[in-house]
Amino acid sequence: MKSTFTIAFILFLTTANAQKKFDQLAESNAIRSVLAQQVNDWNAFDIEGFMQGYWKSDSMMFVGSKITYGWDSTLARYKRSYPTQEAMGKLRFDILKMQFVSSDACLVTGKYFLQRKSDNPSGTFTLLFRKKKEKWVVVYDHTS
Image (cartoon, rainbow, N blue to C red; front, top):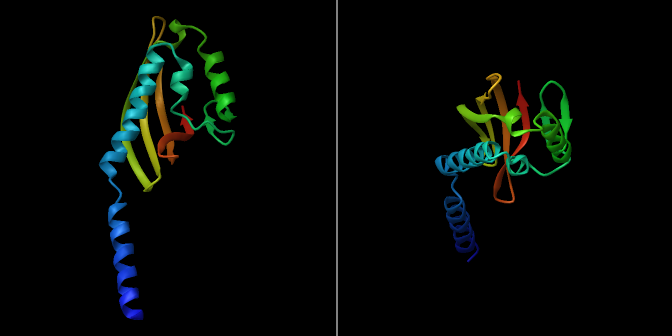
């Protein structure tokens, strides 16, 4: 009886794990969707919408010319740095690499391009996405 229970329990765990199999393509597409929405929001002059791709936490970190901690501080930084639609310009991302370090963490490396009347700044970024409450969000952003 004991061995039958053990075998049944092992089969249950194996089945449960098979049902939770990590689908890297689906998760990659979900992250790409977050990034595409950020581009759409940016190009619509909607910084608050753009920020929905970030983890709404004091633990979120943005590294640029200086380090900014927290979602609210990062939002304020964006608003100061890009006060007008002309300053924001049109944004485009090129994703160079997506590397999953676990089923709930992905390192994304890419390039950003801003097209503005006065100039066309560009640079690179590394984003750490984490899956929080079934939603992919940026928890760490290093942009230069």
